[in-house]
Length: 239
Image (cartoon, rainbow, N blue to C red; front, side, top):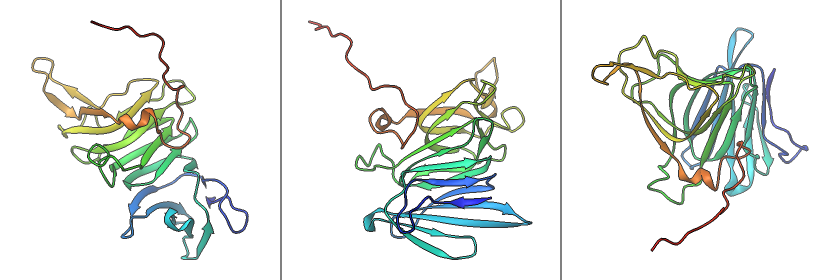
């Protein structure tokens, strides 16, 4: 088990492949504005953290193994991170274009804010885009209040009932809103909170504050499943 970057000896030739479960995936933007993905796995009784840094300005990808060994490859990754297992903690800040995939019988759990380094609504030149495709996408019951999730998300599991839901939707006191900027496609609509029927006020978990990221219509994250582009079927002039 481990983290692998396909390459021809000098240049990257694909994305990132992770064999086995992942304890944590964390997005970091370093002081030079470069995207770094930190992947932590629990192996042989200890945590091992692997780091992948994208450096498109210099046309290179930097990989640091858990033992500190660093390898620099020419070229840029294709944006795909395939984890052949569960992701038990997904969080961080993202500025690059990437999509995380798991098999349909695995889950991705969000334990803290998932956000862009810049708000694309106020920074129109920002080109970062994050995709998450997993059997289920779960907000951890200990997730923060007013959690921020900025990503395109799709759930589809082998049982045909993949969903996005809050693990503590019926047990925890009100935790504010899920502030989603992106998109959400799920086979089964999962619960995120509970409300008082008499007043409509939040009783448990989160309420929803969902906003579509309009950039996704014409520039989705790499290899994120999409439909065909919209075409004009007919038009009519209104006087």
